[in-house]
Image 1: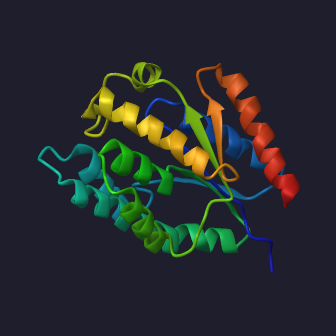
Image 2: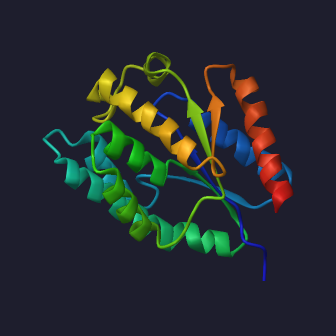
Length: 207
């Protein structure tokens, strides 16, 4: 039976550069001969893509609890039908956003019930935890500059929302320091990747 693949998640506010670094890590693993897939939340699968469309582009009001349950429904489907099967085959999974996004955005950003969200997240993932979470930290100003002009529904939530979300991520990093590693993403892409690569190498060495 093959060794279980690594499960690595990439987190941060919009415009933090996580998607670029995810691709760098994918190339790193492939160059090492490690089977690797990339995915995202929400919207990796067919069902999820329809949920993602609602979450990001629905032009009416979306109640906070409705938004939360849509994210969780997408996550449950994603974990059971894609992530877990890949890991069991020895394939490393790189995921653009996962459970921490829900806590940071719907919890801290929307002033939601953190404890309730953590409990619901645990139900959605059915025991699965990332081996490593890379948190790319930038100021809200930098994130908005990088995100560009075509903003989705969540990106239009306002500066205070994103300040709370960013601070929420940093609180999670303090709470789970063994899993969540904060990376200063204000630096150049090359410098950020060097930090990322060091953390990936440490993960591999630990087995």
